[in-house]
Amino acid sequence: MIFEASEFVFKPPSLVSRARRVLIKPNAGYPMPYPISTSRETMNLIIESIKQVSDADIIILEGTANGESIYPIYQALGYDFPRVLMLDVRDCIWVEVENPLPHAFAVATFWVPNVVLSSDYLISVAPFKILDGSGYFSVPNLLSLLPISKYKGDASAGWGTLYEFGIDKVVADLYFTLPFDLGVVDARQKFISADNSIQGKIEEYGKIFAGEPYEVDQEAAQASGAEVSYLKLIEAGKAELEA
Image: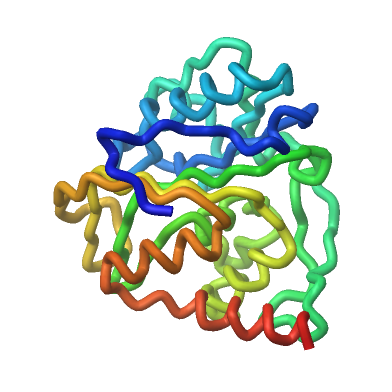
């Protein structure tokens, strides 16, 4: 669903009230403010709304592209929420999880932090970004849940071995392997970068998208007019599972 940012109120689904552990995945790999990173304001709104309906443990989980500690970035972004557990992907125990698609697009199994699997409700919260002409919304935000040490290959940073497969294929596989319940795209502002970097321009947009991650990213893609190849692959994967 699309909301006017000025009127947005986060209403946790009924599943949240019964959850014992809620995991929130921000886009917070760099110590750069919104709209490059997920805003503290939006995170706080979601966290406080969850606390009103649930006593669940709330976890924030993120990792960095260079494999260094995420905690200085949490601090730089003002992620200092009371009674919230802040975790770093690199410190987690990783479990190999099988892709449920009969024919994976690129990756048959992923190494995933075990805390993701033990959480009852999963939320991806991403800014509204167009990088190198492609939309980067709630589903690609899941990529940094994967441990760098398993996927950087010969590169000094990043998920090099996954990019070799074609990142849209990897993102589509991740959608099915990590079934996140909710996607939130904070589109109060739009960030546009010509070269997939943290350098770019910012435009006011005034919207927030929230709902099932694939559907949310579809709406964000239509609104942005950007090419989003992974959505076509997810659609094909859904058709294969239903066949």
